Length: 177
Image (tube, rainbow, N blue to C red; front, side, top):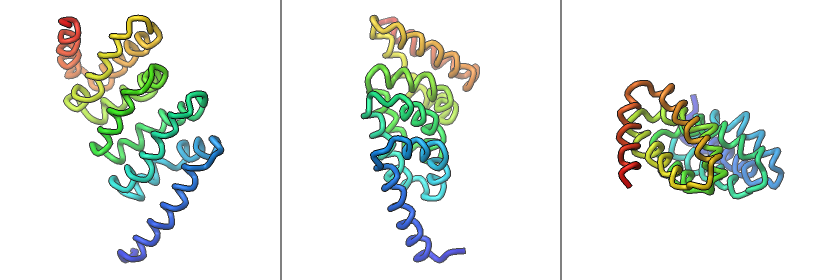
């Protein structure tokens, strides 16, 4: 077992390496990190440091609009990363849900149901489902609507019957506007 000084030194060393990998110009390096290391390193760093070091860099990967492979790796890794960080990641998820329609569609397709399961029905209602329902406001984006309904099916299957009350309340609220 490491003493606190050695553990701190080890964390600092790994943080330097991780930041270097996450800042690399080659998207293959970033994808490999997301695919093979992100969740494990979140466990190693702990929730707060993982949010500061890993999740904060991961979000920037969405700025590269043309790199769909990196986006897919992001959305496959985000569930594991968020499950390691916990509720501290909710503010980041809210920012994620404010992105453009392609990012929203990818989120709905790859991550929404699993994240709703992780956070449970109440948090899912407050953060994920309440944002998802607003996607229906974009009347011209039928692809986003399809992804929304596929995600709703996933959410209902993940959370179970307790999500039906949440969905019914949200849909009633949406239809009254």
